[in-house]
Amino acid sequence: MALTYPIHIHSKTFSNESTPVIRDLEVALPGGEFVSLLGPSGAGKSTFLNILAGLDKDFEGNAALKQENGQPARISLMFQEPRLMPWLTICDNIMLVCEGTKTQRKHQALHWLQQVGLSGAENQYPAQLSGGMLKRAALARAFAYEPDVLLMDEPFSSLDIPAADSLRALLTQLHQARRITVVYVTHDINEALMLSDRILLLSSHPMQIIRDVAITEPHPRNVQSPALLALSQGFKQALTHPA
Image 1 (tube, rainbow, N blue to C red):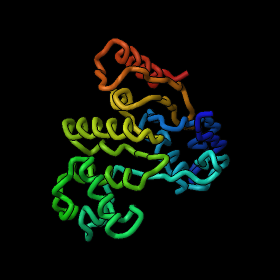
Image 2: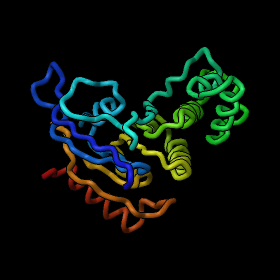
Image 3: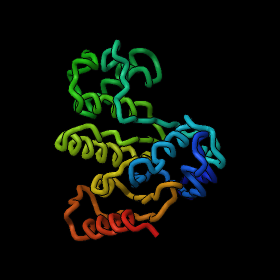
């Protein structure tokens, strides 16, 4: 039986609001899939991600991500900001999440820096890197932790189009090689179509699932293809005129 992560959030309400930000949201996240949470800004997507990460426990329901043996899943979280330690080199930042002896941890860190195209930058500090390079370092750290589940909160939203496209292609390559579960927050329809195995289209106030759509187009994808254009139009219509 394939691994799934069943999630049921009955209600999540902030103390200064009377209406739940999330209500009766139930979904099974398939192990190894890339799932995008697509919805308008302010819909509650980041709140949902914080619940999955265990950072927000003030809700009614069950969102514990567990492996088949009942043990908690290893979770990495990549934010909109790289959140690297400025006083450590890039290599030392990656080593923080690696396991083993110092030599083993350095070997792992250098491996992941090579995987994201940062070979030669290992002795530099975060302040010496461009925005795109910082995102690559954060991506290396996320994968170096060897997670079962990677949670990503609009990680490329601050980048220019070429840098963001390059990182999306890199993320797709890493995911296809590792097949970990990825939950990716975005409000960009094309980004979701380019990356995802599955898209959960979300309403807001309260956040609920409008559509659950599997994306079967092979990678690399062209968002101008007839199949993806049709999906894009359907998503736009659903977001503009939710049922």
